[in-house]
Image (tube, rainbow, N blue to C red):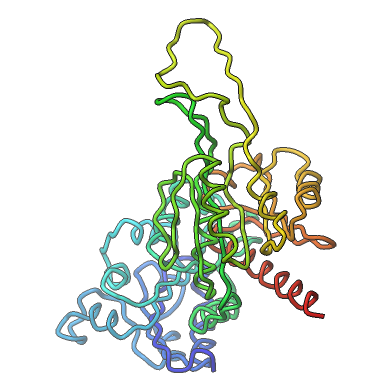
Length: 405
C-alpha cells in the first residue's frame, strides 16, 4: 500500500466537487492511510459529516475551538498529528486566505500551525482559476512549497469548459502516492540549467534586455533537484529565490553566462538552456551616460555568442535541451533550431498566447526531438517542469542505451 501508515488531514471547502470526498477518503484509506476530516462551514452544504465519519472512522472536525479536543486546542492537535494536509477541493477564497495567512476558521488555522506537507486540489469556475488574483495567490503558495494537484480541464457544473475541475479521487490518490514515495529518475545525474534574461549595457545607466522572469528555469531546477539530480543554475538578473539544494551562479551579460556555463559544463550530464539570452550587444559601451542631444540615436550592435550551440558543438557534449520562444511558425522554427544546433531536444512555446510564457506562472510547451514530439498542455510551471524532466530523463536514458550498444 503506497500510503501505508500516512496520517492525512483532509480539508474540505465549499464547492460542488465536495460531493466526491467520501469516495476520496475511501480510496485513501484503501491505500493504508489514516484520514481525519476537517469540514469548513460552506462545505457542509455539499457533503454530510455523517458520511465522512463513516468512511474515515474518525469524528469530523468543524469548529476552531472544540472543547472535546485537547482543551479547546483541536487545531494544534491535528496540526501535530498530520503527515500531510490535503485540501480537496480548495476554493479560490480559501487559496486567497492561505496565501495571505488569514486564519479565521479551523482549516486555515490548522494550515498555519502544521509542519506537514500541504497539497491543494483546486476546484472552481474556469475564469476564476484564470483570474489574475487567483494566479498571483497560486504563485505565492507555490513559493511556500505547497504542492498543487490539478486542476483538470473539462466541462464544469456551471456549463463552462476549461481548467478548474478538481482531479478525480483516484488521480488525487496517485499524485499523493507519488509525492510520498518520490521516484528519482535523475538520481546521480548532474544538470546545468540557464535561466532568466541577460542584460547588455549601453552605458553606465542603460541596458537592453527582455521580458524573461526566469520562472521556468527555476521551476526546472527545483524539480530536477526533487528528482535526485545535482543542479547548477546559471541565472541572469531575476527576483527569484534559489531553490533548496541548488547551486546558483549569478551573471548579467551573455558573455558572462557563456563563461559561467563553459566553466561548469564538463562536470554535467544534461544541459537545459531556458535562459532568454540577448542575440546582440552594443559594439561599444559608452563610458559615460549617453546624453539626449539629437532626435535620433544610432547604435551599432554585434552578435552575441550562441551559448547552446557552443555547448552542443563540444567534442563530448552533454545531453542538450534548448528552448524556443516564438511568436509565429512555432513548430517550423523549433525544428530548424533542433537541427541547426544539433540538439537532443527542444521545448517551444508560443508567446502570443495570453496568460502563458513570459512573466506568467503557467506555460505550455511543444517538445521536439529527432523523430519525435510531445505536446505538454498549459499548466503551472512547476508541474510543467516535472512533465518536461520526465521526457528529458526518458530520452537521455534512450541515448545512453543506444551509445552503449
